[in-house]
Length: 128
Image (cartoon, rainbow, N blue to C red; front, side, top):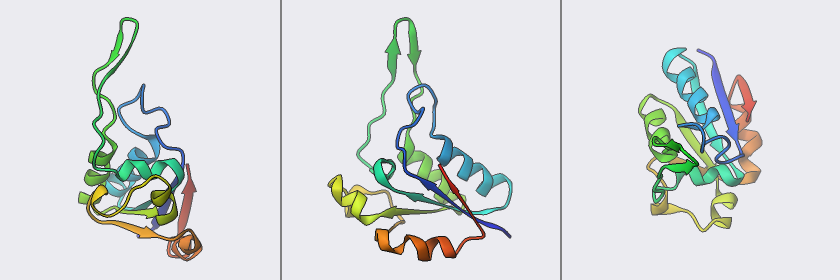
């Protein structure tokens, strides 16, 4: 079975007009439907996805309403439930005051210096 690491560093890209984040959705679909052993590495602003305290609400522009906003912590939990692994850069979490109980369960934190070793564990890497 092929293994894939998806590195996501642009948090909330298109998540206002969409109901999910493209990188999280794609990683989940590959894990779930294609049998690929998939993991996500959250870095920079994307580490916020693992924060449990998010309260997604809809947004309106004129007469258009996004009534199903992205719930990224929920999406990560679903990804994990289907066998996906989630990693986050500890320095990026610290810059945002996040860690420990702030995060969804089973997020593995790694130092930025550990990224090369993590990448080496996978057959393929995609950078979003």
